[in-house]
Picture 1 (cartoon, rainbow, N blue to C red):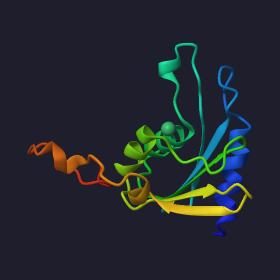
Picture 2: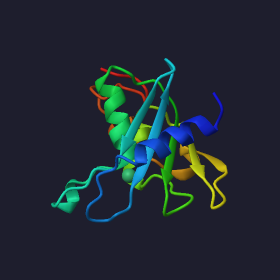
Picture 3: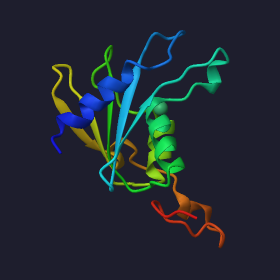
Length: 142
Ligand SMILES: [Zn+2]
């Protein structure tokens, strides 16, 4: 797959963002091991704290379809380039692939790839829980 394809899928998704408050549409496209692409958008709410980001929307869609093999994620926002995932999304994505490539766009619209490890240098992970019940490694599912 060309690196521009997930970026295009993210851009396409951004058109469906629900952003009546911020007017800051973001699109994400999550590539999975089975070759599927899960698109996500930010979805805002009048109770601002309930807003969910595009990246987490895409991840939740994938996991709810039984897909946890995340291979890359593209994130695009028309009004900001590059637009990296927020800390919450980085943490959320880490659960499934700590080495996930994150495809952004630079100010000139060229793909810019960063690793999730680079963007979230000292993450909290399942290993920190230290309980017998928390046997799941990132990428493992119950
Ligand atoms: Zn986020």
